[in-house]
Image (cartoon, rainbow, N blue to C red):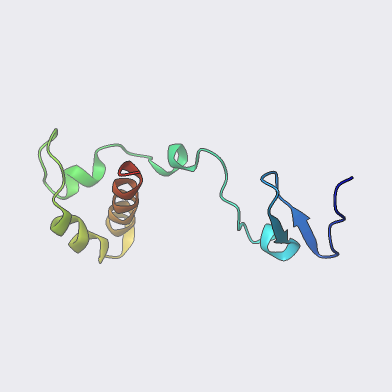
Amino acid sequence: MAKRVPLGMHRMPSGRMMKDSAMHRGAMAPRKWIRGAIDHPGALRRTLKVPEGKLIPAKKLERASQQSGVTGRRARLAQTMRKLGNK
């Protein structure tokens, strides 16, 4: 028999316990979030003037991630993707 779930808690499919309030704040990321995050493939590359087929240099990406707005958001996402690729 499964353990009872305490009041104010929720059991995730992985078996992990999470507070109900955290569930409503969007603490769990939706599946396939990357597909929805990339709206315009190649837009960051064109903005940073890096030729297609070449890697965006880490320093250039770091400087772009400090910017605000769409370019900064795209650069931060690119940094995250670079980290995911190393796993």
